Length: 321
Image 1 (cartoon, one colour):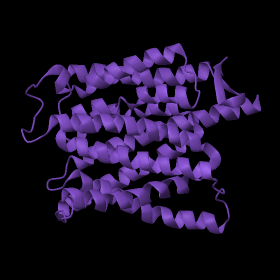
Image 2 (cartoon, one colour):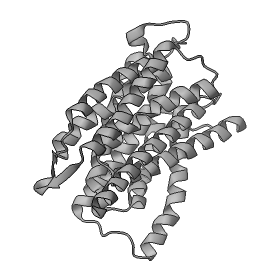
Image 3 (cartoon, helix red, strand yellow):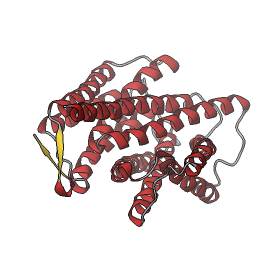
Image 4 (cartoon, helix red, strand yellow):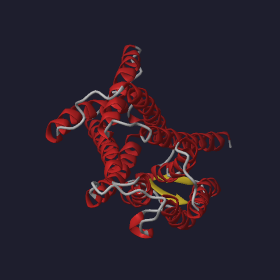
């Protein structure tokens, strides 16, 4: 009984971390939208610079205390994969915001949790209750209603479309974000207790610091220094998404990839609320309905996971009780 309660508390902590991570990533995205003379790759790079310098002292402390697990070749492979997919998903997300409206980008990017459910079944052998599948479909409908993508609803007076944007490129980047995000969840869950959180973040930071100069040299973008006003917003946005990264990595060590990914989609609800408050946008009826559907999916998933807990059988296969 005691072990069961501890297991439930651990899973609840993982779900809670997912919600908190979703809030901070939404906050970071909305803050970036307030900038006047910046490009997305700047806040993306600044975020990983801050993450690196904040993480290294913590990593060093754990190393001196000999509290870091010894990495084998398998752990290193998944650690590198987690870093690569984290960098790729975050970069393509920010780049998609330069080519699409925020609604379009969020709608496409947040389809990652459906991909994660499929990948977690294939690679992690996680079985999902049929109700979770139904909730996934409902949440996907909600995501699209909240985001109100123009490729489904067409243009309207409430959506400003920049004629210089390349929609085809934006859609491709957003779809890439969804795929890379799913791969990040799966590789992160594969690591589980085999690595320390600081090791995961170091892998992400190092790969991001390598990726930025390569991207900047190829595109000749992001080298200039923004204005003072934008600097403050870029730092705030970077700190917010940095905190989200830490909390999300922790969530993946406490709960399965599928539920974490599902609950993480609540970021679309937080984005909807924060944009209404910070950007003074008027909510649409479809946005309100969609937000309710996403909440239903997230809360319903938590309920199902606790009503039908899973046991780990030999070989890592999960079966429903």
